[in-house]
Each structure stands twice: as structure tokens, then as C-alpha cells.
Length: 84
Length: 326
Image 1 (cartoon, each protein chain N blue to C red):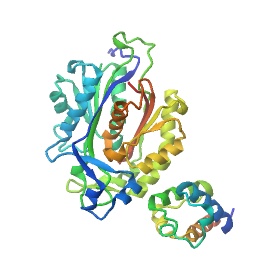
Image 2 (image 1 turned 90 degrees about the horizontal axis):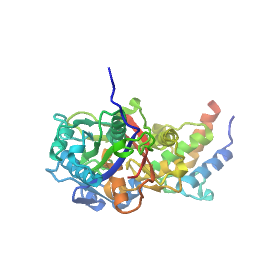
Image 3 (image 1 turned 30 degrees about the horizontal axis):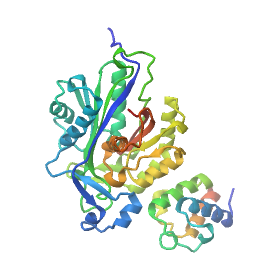
Image 4 (image 1 turned 135 degrees about the vertical axis):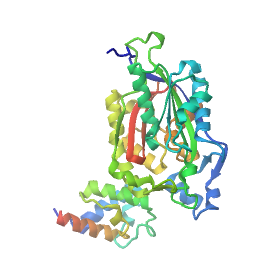
């Protein structure tokens, strides 16, 4: 079942809060993980794993490095959940 | 054909640890490669590590740790009839390390073999020792994890040289129930849960004898933080120990972030968490007995405490078991 962008953002915000301690209201689509949210590559792996549990969408390591902003992840999850 | 009579099970009589004298700080490494104290602490959780001297061998460190464990056990060298050295960094593969270590400790003609399960080596060796005692093929076993990773590290590679270190840890394993070997005695080493994932062999490897340790950090991190907590829980189940009974969780000291992630998923808030990596670095097969011997020395653990061990690393190999602190 396709999720709306808002639903994915809400779920992703929860994950980021839990793993990196970034409050949900700071997680907005245009933010970059590394520079704006201060999330490093290992935390990104943890976020990817948690996203897989939550959204049922696998984000492999080789694609993870291309996901720079919150919107990138929303788009990736959105596309994958539509095609799934 | 007959079999040995065997015993009711095995227990650990004592631990011993050895760290080389030379302390290398993150600032020392920042002088070699493009890194910083802050970066290393935040990514791997290491503040300092110990490195062996140029002439100090894996066997030297194994002898030091093994000697301490032997002294702590109250046994004499003559009581030991099997020596297992878990190592993946010996200077040479022939001769093995175990026979030389046994000789230097005054242990006369024991069974002696090396075991390579990389960072899982200590847990594999402990399982082999426990099974040998239980089956009756050995009475008392000296198990040692000893590594000189510094000789397999590229000191210009900032992704690996900040992690790996040198050291040794040991345990003496003997039968439960004392001399009478009474069958109703409670085992001190639980069943091992072990396995491997050969399809990930290339994620941590040394390509050939002219190469250094290579590690695909993200892939290993993802695997370790998702695959291991079910193995750890299964080790508790097999031992009949509820995770809430654990006094301490001692994962291989790979990376503080991995250690904390596994602990979080394990969900045992009452259990102390071994974080020896902060001052020891990643010493592969030595890390678990090193951490335990330090925690026991510092009075953080009591005799009879249940400890959950899980080793994991190159191969990929992993092994977990519950033990009772001696």
C-alpha cells in the first residue's frame, strides 16, 4: 500500500529522533543528514535498518550513500513502496 | 570401541589478561593519518589502545595472559592437558602458537592447537574446551585469545588503523563438581550457538600475504547490528537463562557503536555492558577475556554472576554462550 509523503516523513522523524536524538520538528524535507542534522554514516545505516522495519523497504548500503536529504529518503521509500 | 567417561560439564576457573605497555592515543594517530580524537571517539568509541613492541609476539602476549589465568586458577601446569590459542594474527602459521606457549608455561606435552575464527575465536575456543572437558578428552584446558593486529594494519589507512590493537586474554576451563565430578553439578559454560556467513567473507579480509586488513565498515555495522541480538538471545534460551538474569553482557569489543546497538536490541538494562574497547581498542579474539579479566579485577563482577558472551568477526563467524563468572 502506498504511503503519503507526510506519512513517510512522520515515520522517518520518529526513527531519527530515536537513533540520533534529533527532535521531530527539526526533521524537514530539505535538511541534509550530514550537515544539517549532524548524522554520520553509521547512524545512517541504523536509520536504514529501522526504516526497513517500519516501511518494509530495504535501503542497500550502495544506495544509502546517495540519499543526502530527508526528501531523498522520502522519495526512495515512496517509490519502493509503490513498486512493492 | 569405548569412550571416555566424561564429566557433567565445564566451568571457568579463572581469567587472565595482558596488554602491552605502549599506549597509543587518538592524538598520536592524528599525527599519522587525517583523523582526530573527536572523530575516533564518536565513530568507534576508542580513546586509546595498546600496541605491542616490535619484538613482542603473539606467543609472548599469550604466555603473559595464560600465565595469569593459570596462577588465578590455583592449578599447576601439570594439571593442564589441552592448550588452545585463538588467533588470526600469528607471525607465522607453522609452527602453531599453542605448542610453544604451552612449553613456555611449563605445561608438559598437552594437546595444543591454534584456532582461527577471527574476532569470534575466544568463544569458539571456549566451546571447544568445554566440550573437550565434558566429553573427557581433556581434564583442564587453557584457552587463550591473543592478537597482534598492529602487524596486519596499514598505518596509512585511517579507516582501520584507528580501530585495531594488540593484547591477550585467557581462561582456565575445568570440570564442574570438583574431583568427584558429581553429575548433579551445575555447568558454568552454557551451550554454544555458533554459525557463519561465508557470503560476506570479503567484508573483512586480508587479500594476500602482502596486504593489510580491509574492512567494509558500513556493511559490517549493518550486519552486526541486525543479525547478532537474536543469536545472543538464543544462547540464553539454550542455557535456560532468562536475559533478565544476566549480570553482564560481554560482546566482542569491535566498535562501541556496535556494542551499544546490540545491547539496546538485547534489552537487558539490568546487565552491565563491557566497554573495554575505550582503552583497549579492538583486539579481536583477545577482547572478550581481556574485558572480563579487567571487570573481575576491578570488582565489578561477583562469582556466580551470569555473563553473556558473543564473538563475531571475519569469516564471517560468530559464537555466543552464557558463562558463570568464576
